[in-house]
Image: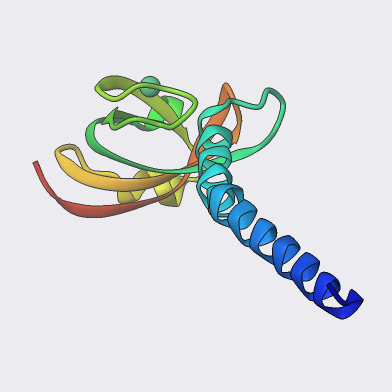
Amino acid sequence: MRLWRAVILLNLAVGVGLLLGWLAWGQQIPRLEQQLRDAQQRVLLVGVERTWVVSGVVRAVIPETQLIVVTHEEIPGYMPAGMTMGFKAASTKVLEQARVGDVVKFILKGVPPDVEITDIEREGKS
Ligand SMILES: [Cu+2]
């Protein structure tokens, strides 16, 4: 066999090997990256400021303590769904936007457990 034939065959073998390797492993990378992102979403990093967009229903508004009591959906990495609890409103404006019985989406922001509602938006009536 001539040398150039051996070189071409070797290159082809390496090329096929790389292709098979990419097919086997390379295509897993996007899936692994997605899993990593999901896991990071679920882990509560202590001492790190977090922001969540949370759905819920307003149950009470307590101006004296600046609290909005809501039954909320899951807050990933922080709280399960179905809890009814009070969150501090970041401002009087936010507090005034909350009405008992409203179905809302709100922004919860802070370093857990020191979190507060920085914005609230009405989506409907329960
Ligand atoms: Cu809760």
